[in-house]
Image: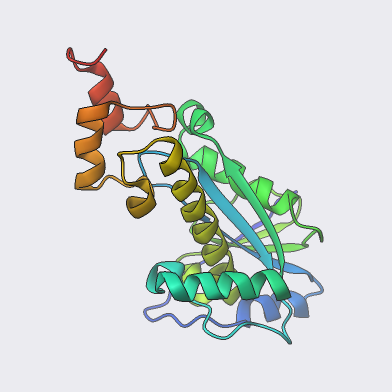
Length: 218
């Protein structure tokens, strides 16, 4: 049964291994960190990652992926694949539209944990919504800035999704996904008006739904 331990955010954040160490001290090893990428975009899947770090081999510089340059994220991603246990899960556009983005994110997180080669006994999750997992769950607000395992998961999720959006940009040219990763930029908005939505657009999202409901669509 999943057990939630809520932890409030601190005024200042610095990613460290303290939360993992506390769980290990309780006999709850291995511990994984979980985060996602792609809740806000208008197009593409939501991708989650689960990462188990070795305390004696934690890559230097792990931080919230949004604070890192693309080059730094890519380097850390490659390093994490060498030294960590990684699981990746996703929820497709049709699932996002059917379930809603929060439920789809929780599903992607559960799939990421199921993808781990080693089953965790404790999961540290970014945010305040616990996914349904077969282990203990601890939610950390701003966890990607406070906890190195969650920071690692944020990097894996973002790099994985960004690379997929670059590939999708080749299948669906004109939207600039190789640059905007499906987010609602001016470039993306203009392309939607000109080209219309495609199968990778989240039709439950207001900007896409509004365009589909327009008398000029179709």
